[in-house]
Length: 164
Image 1 (cartoon, rainbow, N blue to C red):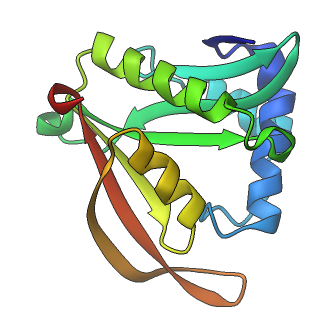
Image 2: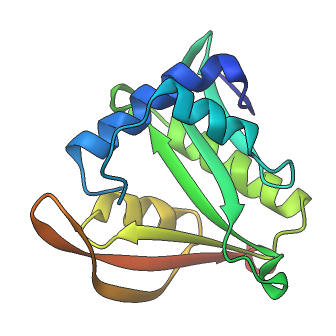
């Protein structure tokens, strides 16, 4: 397995992974499935300061992780938000851990101080996964999203580079 920067050829795989979570879970607040054209536009707008990595298993994309701006104001320039998803076929195989280590290493190399993950509060597996890598609970916003005929709360977790 190789962890590498995303390439345009990977976008079809990312669409499949992303759309699974959009259609079948409350783990993302996106409610409309994405098209390949949507992902191409997203890819073209990626900021080179924020890495987007894929787990490549000999041409099969098993998952992806990327950093994006946390907030637009200048004082937040050393903080990024993390997004990480795996193809469900690859859960429990250590791939998520390799992606997480790689994206956090990239964060350090790019001088990010704090990484924030916003996780739906009922997603206990993601919460446990983040804690395993040193993310600490930073608070909860109750019932801020509505998807699947239910109100969903989000939990904030943060990782600080100097502590890890």
